[in-house]
Amino acid sequence: MTNRRFFTRTLLAASLLLPLAGASGAAQAADGKYRAVSTVGMIADIVRNVAGDRAEVTGIIGEGVDPHLYKPTVPDIKALQSADVIFYNGLMLEGKMGDVLVRVARSGKPVYAVTEEILEQGDYVLTDEGEHYDPHVWMDVKGWIRAVDVVAKGLSDYDPDGASAYAANATAYKAELEKLDAYAKEAIASIPAERRVLVTAHDAFNYLSRAYGIEVRGIQGMSTESEAGVKDIEDLVAFLVGRKIPAVFVESSVSDKNVKALLEGAAAKGHKVSIGGELFSDAMGPSGTYEGTYIGMIDHNVTTIARALGGTAPEKGLKGKLSH
Image 1 (cartoon, rainbow, N blue to C red):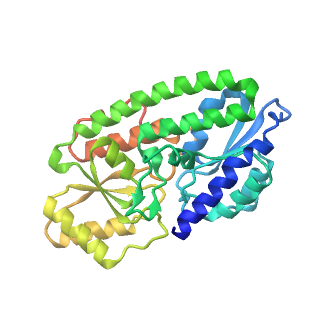
Image 2: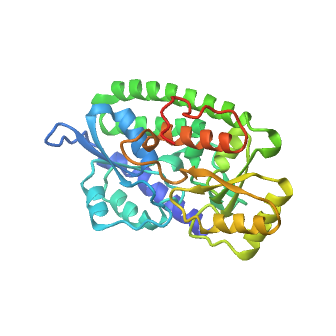
């Protein structure tokens, strides 16, 4: 078993067993709400939709921030310590927050690892050649629907009085996600087959690839802690030229220097490649915007990909709300 898998299992055990000891009923803040804290925005968005007005929801890692490299600040640690219930992604996405999450879980506070509970449900979770789990489950809307169920159960365990409300909210939210999933399938399928290739800064789109039938290539590995070598760039340049791929994509939370190297390498071989747009990979868009929600994030991604590669997705996306 690799060190990464050992760490994953250790944190999973701490987070899934200890909520039973700490969940003695919902504590109420001054405004009558309890405090729910999530690491990444995609999870915080689920919690907001499911909890409704029963909880005050805080997301720690904001827009344009890479969770693979993020180091918790003193205010982050205080937020986790003062939270009543905590949700995080797991599968090493928040690697540098691992020690803090373990300590909080061991204190008896309810802490739920969303994707690691999905890991226990069978062979859904992808791996990198059998060694490292791929944490980017949210790129497949069907997979993220499973995460909604995990959150609804966690909130109900913590706050049994709200269980019926959480169930109703989860059902309504999942209905919206089903529509999003259908749109993603339609948008990606509209790309001509020979152009249905997504090249990005790092390997965050494998679940999208499997769910929607598009080949993906990342310059870096699943974690941005890995470094791309010269040969990695050269191989991708040859791939772009050979397949006559018209566009590659940058990511909002990852440096674009390697993507620009691809453009320069392809141009040197006589093939023009453009940047098809900026995608949201490990973080959503700005808070308060449509793209700052999970639905808006995925709508933006699949619409941008489809239009840049020759598909027929509407300019403003599924709901007509995309800002760019």
